[in-house]
Length: 258
Image 1 (cartoon, rainbow, N blue to C red):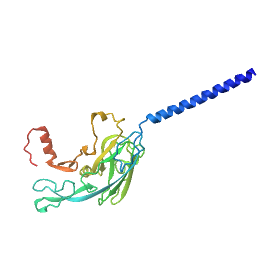
Image 2: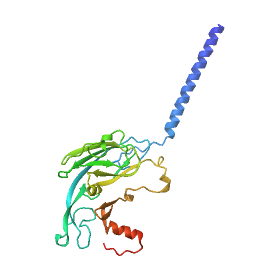
Image 3: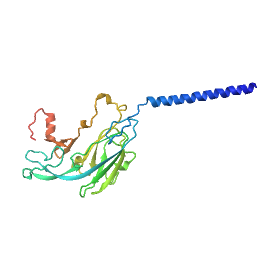
Image 4: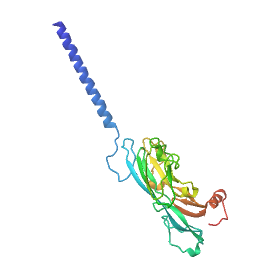
């Protein structure tokens, strides 16, 4: 009888201990779930969205049409004959020295800025409309460890995108920061033309500099490029040569003309 009573008390103690442990574990899990800041369950039309560390990565698709167009250069006012959107403007050839080809991405002098969140998957279709010209693209700042053949110089780390063909790049935006992408053709002037911004954001909790600014808007992006001897800001010409701009930065007054 004494042995039976002792066994009964031991079983009762183990049962109470297990129930208490189970309730304790459940309480801890519910507390973690309750106090964890989950992101809003709203759907976003594209990948340019507020970033959250608990969000699932999105698959972000882009299409970049690489083509060329004719532009009237070196007119009487020494400016490119293009409107503010970067498209060719109809001005008379009588006041211009010559007509030259300009290379465009999606019909503009500056490619679209790709804005995504950390760890998003980029699926980018490159449509090469350039006649008899193979190209490749480099994504600055991205290590592309998972897909090393999706970046770099043609015939070194990847095959080139042949003329009048389509190639699909797939890479993960793992490195946050402000980067840019550009073409690799072996022609420095062409490579300077075919480029655009690549911005990979992270959540405010992970961004160490988030307390230094109030807003992080898309419109705050400034992209400087150079075509021949002219400087462009966000694809728009400053109507001043690059050498003249350097003189203006060094000297308080300059006699160079635009």
